[in-house]
Length: 346
Image (cartoon, rainbow, N blue to C red; front, side):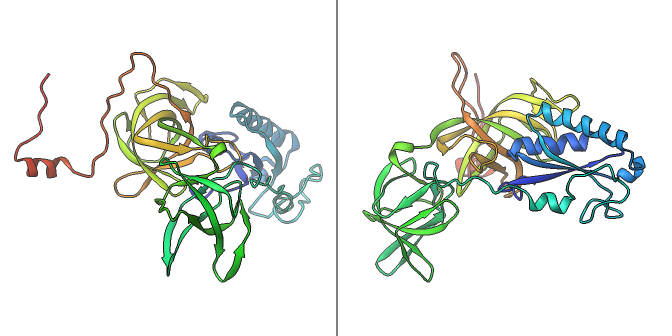
């Protein structure tokens, strides 16, 4: 859900009409809130168990509407259906003559086209750098904005300026410009070498840059998350070593309130602070866009959490900023090299 639905423009929230907005529905709604999908079609399934009764179905609809409202979400449409017999899925149901709205397939066809991201500030994450002959090609997909030959761009946190000398494509003629959604290869003057994960952007519209980031979290691991754990934060093509330095609040799925907590339970939602040893460039998470959508990855390369980045986390007066951080050298390796075990005395 976190990775596969990251670029989705709409979602179908399936609710068991015989049960209403139970925990699974609350969890799925929280996911929609987390990844920012705003066009939501609610499919009230199994209405045959309610005898297709309009009053009973509308009561469930009110229950789900209340849930979505608490998460700042709004359903574009409610479709009462029975998937078992196909009622209101692809064909209109004879069992619900009172329902005059579209079927599910009609509702999906009517999903509005997303707004263009071409007019936003340029963000071109570097996927890789290739060399063919005497040319070096910087490849990646333009996530937002547009770029033209002759533009001056700034490269990553190193802030090296370079001119777009050409925009190339595979087996296509060179282009004068390219825009959001296109995968391109550009050549730069001077012939600087960006790293994978560097952001190319225009100087006057730079992204946010911070080493401490406030993050929403959907925790996927079956063991609780605690302060001090370290992961890799994947953000577009970039990866950063990060450490959880604070758990600010944890969501109670029963009433959707946020409360202080010392750990995040399995499949829990929370707001945390991540700290890195270098600055992270990003655009804060915005509902309905791909901005700031990160995931946390453990040492085994497993995705253990969805982590939209909300913005920089300021250091409060008197706050301790010394924290454990990840290392590629294990405790066992260090002890073997140094010839003694690690100890600390106060």
